[in-house]
Image (cartoon, rainbow, N blue to C red):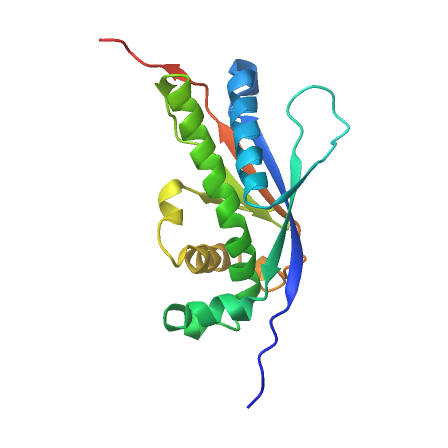
Length: 187
């Protein structure tokens, strides 16, 4: 019987929280969502580093360093659900397994900030961009335990050529577009 090796890899995800419409944006609200997300990720042990774009103004993206276990350990934990796809999309499953907690924090920070400022929470548009190709993620995409598998399958179906070449070293970016906040109507 061969012992399964559990290797650890470092993945870097570039996180951008930007206004949906830069011309009509509440920069303070967008920055607050960004800060809340970063703070929550740091509390969970993520290493955060500012990433300078060379552009003046705006909100600078941050690099999030996360340690991933190899796809095999994730797959073993969810064997009954994803056994048939193990070899085809293991790198995508590993990537989405690392990105999902980050995306959840963005959604949570937006909802928390909207509640704190007593405004209506607008749906955020979040794209996970792997090797320059985006897949859009909504909050309900993250509810199930098999979220990483479902997103990996969807990415593979939409971009089979790119998916075939994705590795855990691929360029990964999460981009959240925050809509302009709307004041709650008072009764």
